[in-house]
Image 1 (cartoon, rainbow, N blue to C red):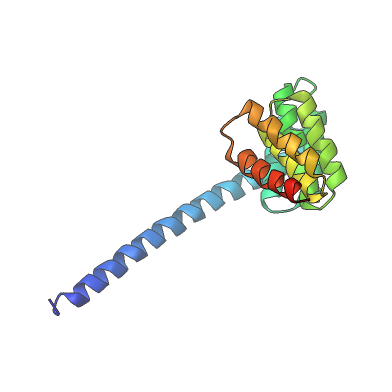
Image 2: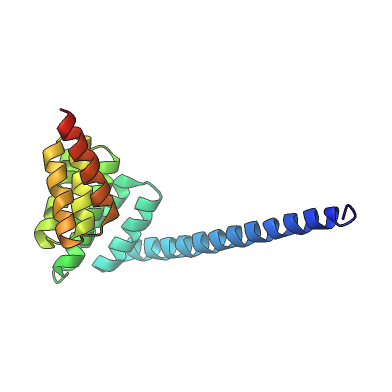
Length: 175
């Protein structure tokens, strides 16, 4: 048994290294793809006018890089690029802009963006959760609860909404 112990340790180490290498390789490939798309869209939109989808994609990549000001500018261009954008897609853009403003702690503007998204697509659960989150940050607990409960009306099994409603209701009871 003692003779096999080093083989077992080396085998275990090899397995761990293989999993780590696979994980790292997947991340590198994912990052390369993202950077290629980023570069292509940047070049294209620098030289010519793009579609709403292209502006939205590039803005989302800027969001991933936490470049919020640039992403907001591109989201605004996405809204102006095509007048025939479906309401659900416009709601996605407004929600993403709300997120960018929220990340910069511009809560009032974020609220406005989320409300605009919900005006276009009232059953947009992610926007309802995001709006509830902003209300929480602003200590507007009753409004936050209302948003989360609305989200639960559309999606009764939404874990985020359930957890936040329960937590906030407990806080309301203690006051």
